[in-house]
Length: 399
Image (cartoon, rainbow, N blue to C red):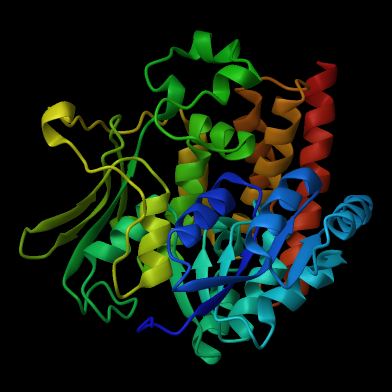
């Protein structure tokens, strides 16, 4: 008989790379975890396979047509899983009474409402959707605190920082003797590329990450280093760290996932193979440890670890993110929305790689000046930034 009570989990964004890795870890521990709900945007075939394997109570397709296809296929297979559709259904399965924890792995602003719903329902929230914090910041952290939710970071960097901080850390760096939070970055596929070479980058080249297997949007973010910029903002909210004590370190091997420097000169780092199942397993079982299916780190095989300062001329998106964090208010939401629009335009070959930063900078220069103290304000800032970004994209496309 298992000594652990079964934990019921909702996986938001089940068909993405984080969702698939989460289900891989869950499948290794059927005595610990049971899937309550799985969600996807429109990949009904992939979700069908997952539903038939894990038999959740609910499957949510955001796209209504995909939901109908999934429902038909599940009925034909004799499945008893109930299919729901639409954004409201995501919030329902994130906040349901039966749910113990929620893996928040929907990419982009679309993940904010269900992730916030999980926090407001006092769930254990495994946060892989960094945009939730970038967009809503204090609003989200207040929801966690006010409702007794537990927030555990899934990004490899923030999970590494979490592991390097003292137990019971309460978002007060000075009180805990923290001098600096060091976020490592691989530098992506263009770490050593010239500006001229970057002008000619194609979407496929930008999505070919040297170390990590990721979706196309986050792969482009890694290539521009906007991903690291969003992580800087996320680190600010997760750990109560002001911009001045957050430092980005380019580390091409992606073995040290992040570090914390203390006032006594100690630097504590978390190392591991670049496999997202490690932070996922850490958060699923926290404060315990479980097998993640990840091979042991062979330091002799790695042999060396390199570190560089980020080149802000080559990667202006990182500088823009620091500027947005320092500006506060609607600037981080503007940054995120403009980036999502610009990346989509790049992936569909309407603008060039270097134009991504140009679109974001133009939007930040006209960022609305109001407090983001409600969801309505968050989405107002998001909508305004998207309108401006689309105008900039049209102008660049026509040039």
